[in-house]
Figure 1 (tube, rainbow, N blue to C red):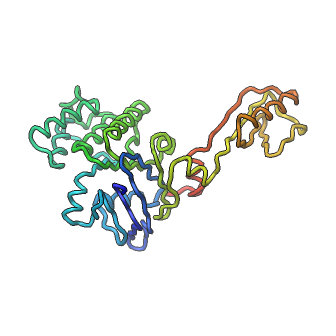
Figure 2 (tube, rainbow, N blue to C red):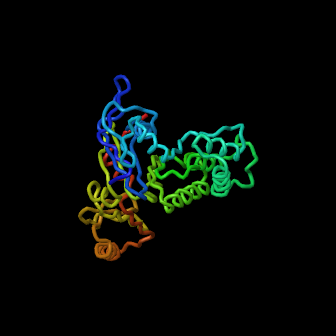
Figure 3 (cartoon, helix red, strand yellow):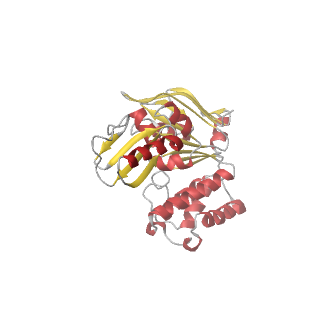
Length: 307
């Protein structure tokens, strides 16, 4: 049984349909990527899980309990952690004061709260800045504090909305390590992000939304196989522009670059290299590109810009 199960979620705001039958499942210990263009319904779906939006139709179940305002649903939602994209911290409070405040809001008290604040300050790397007012923190420090405030109560399911937005590469890497630590400790994660390379590297499975519907779901290899195919693109950068004598089926020539798609790199690349060599051309560089999540995403949602 999935620990988070959303079936046929529907929600309209006036004449705009934000969700139109979206469904997804989150499994125990899984890192699930929730992707989609602007306006696809991601934020509305996350808000429905968090209890900030009431669906017009469909159902959200967490740990087997319907999140419908019942006592059982409210108890299940207390096992949920939320890390929003916008900083949900008090800028005039110190790092420690922010953690104490959110800890109390999350139901922690006494020695348990004190222990969790100590843990969080160490985990987010702000022990030496515990008594500094957070308004002066860097973007990466605010992101880490934001994350610490959202998971202080040891949630079993964590909703992450663009958790690395606007931070430097070092801070981004540290945040991914922190999140992976939570996952190893048993948490299940739902990640919404526009950074497709990051989702590709960290997520176990991916759900793609568009126009309020789930249009694809699976592991990266499954999505690639079902959409763009698993062929590699091979590009050879030659020492000069080849002449018309070098004609091969499926090969594209753009200046000094020669490219084609191959199903078996081990055998087809060798044949291509021999043909180029026999033509008297030198090779300055060889690039092999595997199909990516970005290719899948654009294949499914199109290339037009959305606001």
